Image 1 (cartoon, rainbow, N blue to C red):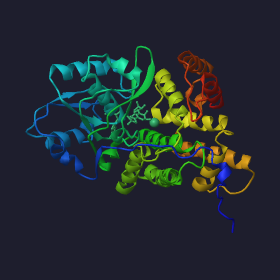
Image 2 (cartoon, rainbow, N blue to C red):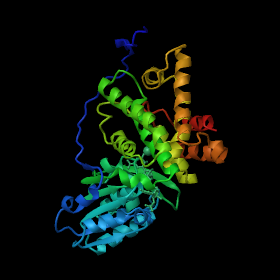
Image 3 (cartoon, rainbow, N blue to C red):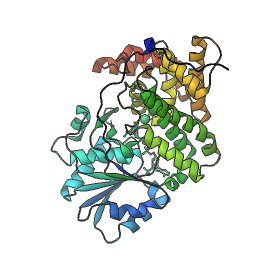
Image 4 (tube, rainbow, N blue to C red):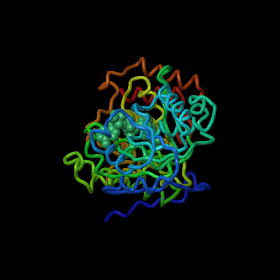
Length: 395
Ligand code: NZQ
Ligand code: ZN
């Protein structure tokens, strides 16, 4: 029997860092839980419900929300688009201020909730909403909660939000408060399209990789939790594809997406996030769905940063894909190939050329990174030039 690979102490590149953990969101999970809305919301709040463009009316979520809020006063703000735009959110902030709203309830996917996080910030200040995004942190927000209808972003249990400025085709994230509560009923996912499910699974999987695929030897606990989520996503994906109305599978998918980005798997460890930053540019410039952009960029990031990430790639390959034979080089390559194959198995393309994206966009993204003087990744070495290399590898 082959002995298990034990990482020698000299491989420990970067030990566990100090951290403070606090996730205040109350997670209310399961069938029929939208009816808890009224008891979860404080009494006597002036409520504004925020929504997308109508999926919730087609799948009965809106009716369930209305039923649960019977007898309460609230106003509604519709039209928060996928990749929520600051131009729309400014209008929502104005509506909220005019009506002296003091509590927001997002009913929809990550976009509606992210947009709502910015509305909550804009309502607590006189500052322009885009300035809050550019600062990267909301100092004050009015309270908000969610009924989440897409498993993907983890926004239902984290303090992040990603906002697009349509005028300049820019897309950036900012951090702030967490939702007071989020209701997750896996049955509401039954109406998601195959593409949305593929993108959601890819997003959740990539969130784990962004926090896990850096260096070895930081925390056994974080590693095992991350690997557990990756293995679960790989295990449930084919079943979900075959039957997206299987409650237990959709429940595991929904919970995995939440746990992938609610701070639990990043205690005291270094993180990457370069793939996300490059992916946001693809979405801003071409409208590529978020999860799909990651399926294109992540394998390329791993190819370009293979040496830097090699020890962790070997651990990932062995523990998640069961890669055993060959040299370290071959095993690392195999782990990257299997990652790309996983995204493809979801039904997503993984190359820029499949999407008609080429050199022009690559240069634009490299120039944008260079102009902003940014450098991403766990070693802060993904500059404009490295992003260019990554995107070229994704052609
Ligand atoms: O607008 P409606 O009519 O509601 O339709 C939506 C939208 O067209 C539809 N939809 C939502 N729930 C549905 C449904 N269709 C059928 N059945 C349902 N149950 O789905 C479409 C996409 O929704 P969206 O909210 O855009 O999807 P997702 O949840 O994937 O959110 C993506 C956004 O979140 C950001 C992304 O960048 C992107 O802007 N992210 C947010 C993060 C965070 N806050 O932590 C982290 C992520 O990395 C990500 O960047
Ligand atoms: Zn993401």
